[in-house]
Length: 149
Image 1 (cartoon, rainbow, N blue to C red):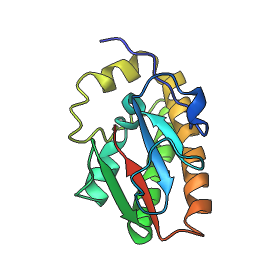
Image 2 (cartoon, helix red, strand yellow):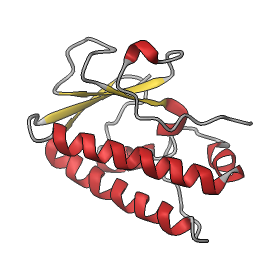
Image 3 (spheres, rainbow, N blue to C red):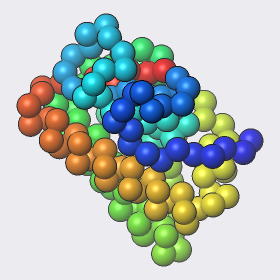
C-alpha cells in the first residue's frame, strides 16, 4: 500500500477531489452534506487519529453522522493536543503511537512512517488548524457533527 496523504483542513467543498472526505459541521445533523461552514478531512488522514473519536464517543460512526456534544469535544480536543505534542516530540527522534482505532486502517501507519518527518509535521499542522476551528466553533454551538464517508 502506498498513499499520498492529504493533510489539508479543507473549507471549500467545491475544491475537493472525490468523495472520500469526513465532513465536520457546526451544529446537529441537518440531513445535508457538503455545507458551507463545514470543514473536510480526507478519510485516510482522518483514520490516522480516528481512535480518539472512537474512545471519547463510542457511538462514533464511520459511515454516518455522529452528533458530538460540546463536553465530549473537550476531551477530543485535549487528546488531539496531546497527539500534536507527541508528533512534535517525534520529529526530534521519538516515535508517536497513532490512534488509528478500529477503522480497519491496515497499512496506514506504515505508509505514514515511510516519510515520517514530513508526515508528522503535516499532521501536526492539520491538528493545529482543526483545534483552532473547533475552539471557535464550540463558542457558538453546543454540538459539532462529524459526517462519515
